[in-house]
Length: 226
Picture 1 (cartoon, rainbow, N blue to C red):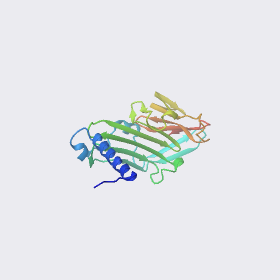
Picture 2 (picture 1 turned 120 degrees about the vertical axis):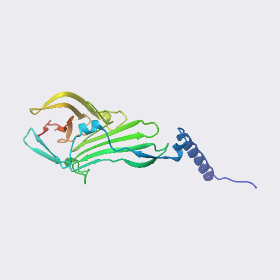
Picture 3 (picture 1 turned 90 degrees about the vertical axis):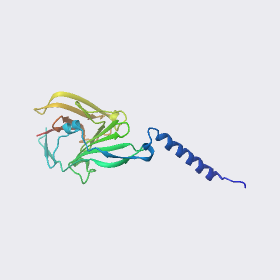
Picture 4 (picture 1 turned 135 degrees about the vertical axis):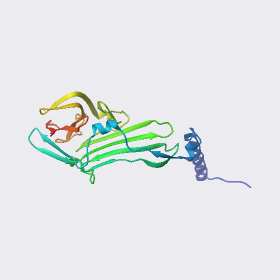
């Protein structure tokens, strides 16, 4: 008996072989990496994130500008993930825990009325290695990084708008006559024409306080936490 293969059959066979080889290569660490194992994923526990974002539900945040206007936000939702059971494998080895802080949880897209902060930690259950992702949104302003350090947001060239953001840290900073300690300034590049007039281009966060100020472009109008 003679077997005949058309091009489609041959292509499908080759793809199946390649996929099988890739799966075998990805399951190289131990006997349960392909079959999976049941684990208890930890709850969100990131002390530095909680120090830089020390908010409580229904906390009111009032900012006054240099032109005597005020902005008020209320921290409507804080969600710190709890411990849970999960099955991990060599292809999906991570337990993911995250913290979310939002003033407008029902409409994140309404940028000009929202503060939204997220910290996500992924822990490989085979190697115990950990990666962090941080998302800071203040109205239209957005900065991303790899978690927090004692000096604030950690920039990472593999994450988000790294090249478009600069940071600086000061032990003490005076904003509109008010002194704040352990402050990081995070600024978006304004030379590329992507920041519209009146939008936020710079924010200030303080350890154990959170967002203490932000500035508009190009007026440099400063809003300071009261």
